[in-house]
Length: 420
Image (tube, one colour):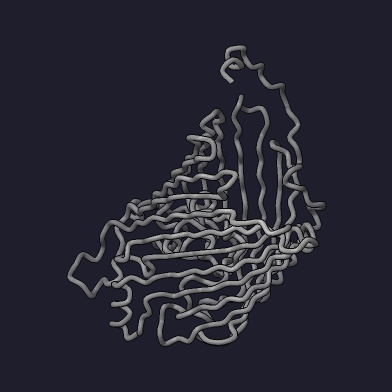
């Protein structure tokens, strides 16, 4: 069934790609109007040694989206509507063959269609550049969003393992998003802030539902805030804090006299992402991310991610990029104690290494070969280190139609002009 679903997704994506027509460059996209997009990602990955077993897995993702920005509804402000659906499926290399904590494939998920995003955003404009977004949201679209590390296929380089592991059904991120609200603004040029509140348990407790808005008081919320700076010499520097309002079961529930459910499931993360050098046509960027989570509730209590990416490595390939990444997930004392009681020799950490090359062949097709090494998969000393080779291909197209004004914009008063 998974193989059939993957073939159907590929066929549907090819039909949609053909229907959309020529790719619209981002520079040419209208500020107001309608834009539609389609993307298909296929990922073939093989565990050559170590882990749970040697084996090959093919997974895929089909993404269909639309964004509408109406014109002239408000003076000096914008309203945006966004909608997207997604199908993910195929084989699970981490669950079936590697058994790792950090993950090696960021599109691996149970076979299902999802209503991925459905939100509206009001941009108030002005010097504060404040905006309010409400609806079905992906937390990772605004918080802990990667820049340099977005090249890599390991999920830990998209959102840190210490945050991505949390919650009753994970936080509101791919593939199961959740009801949320996000407020963002700007204090100074380059210095932005954002805060958000999301469902504590998105979906219906599973990963295979199309859409579930079953919000209960006892599930609580995930509260998160982030401060970010970006400038000419800085890709991104950010600091984030997050916390669940609900109580959670301790990892050692049933093995301790302490209260089984306790409050305080929270953590923090920090990211420094900088341009490092230019060598001829090549540009070198690097990032370092640190994150912590409460060890009472989470297997990984400390995470460190580091990446180095060389863009435009060859004069003849201006859009290519090659990078090396390390993901280090440290396991907490409580987690290791529980594993030892269960008869599993727990390691203090799992470390993943990734070497990836991305090569756009056309404006709508890119190939992404990679090699990955996982030391202590699952932080389990009984499992051998794993070597994984993979090849990913990405198809993407977007088409925009500018909005034709239905009425003339209201004249701006002289008082308002004087205040600009």
